[in-house]
Length: 83
Length: 201
Image (cartoon, rainbow over all chains, first blue to last red; front, side):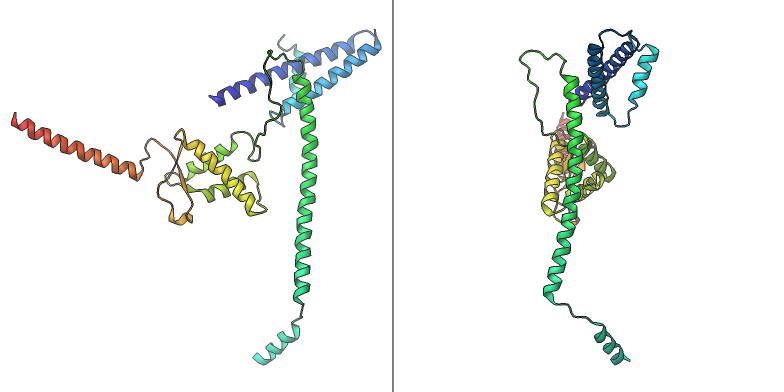
């Protein structure tokens, strides 16, 4: 029973992290494509997103050090992901 | 000829004082221990930096997630990872007992197996004892739901150590066999008695 709960937590956490990574990647892409506006605020937001992206990748590596995280985020950006 | 070889060996022999032997050996042993300690320090420092990095990442990811009011997440849990990921020690023990079945495996061989599988090298007896306690505790936890069983008779070739075996529905201990035999004998005598009684009707 405990094992089942643990597996369920791991699965849903990994899905959550992957979705978050796709969202962050999209926002980074949007910021890069956006015409220049408030440069300081955008740079700050970009730094925050990059830090979050690194944190998400590091968290995902807890599941599997060999996980190809680039493939997940790449699919999300190029193919539109799940949403 | 024997005289010649004897003379030769006497000439070859070099005397080293016991003090020098003791001091040189002790210094060499300390150098070995120092090398181990330095290597361990380097490994620990590397691991510390990895842990700090991963912890910061997890905290950053978890920070915006809502947690219901009144729920306090545990700040520190002393999770055991000496034997690999969670559940790995159980898996190793069950694998070993599975391969030994229908025979059992004594605790010393289980400790050796776990240590070899996890790449653990015991620096002293205390470390080995510590590992044996972990294996023994895990066996007792597995015995509670009936997954493994400790054999009643202590294995003579196990040097007095407890012998454990994978429990199966088909496994019957000697004590259980005796009880079953007594039940069968009682049932047989009961049937015979009934038959005799039936014969009277």
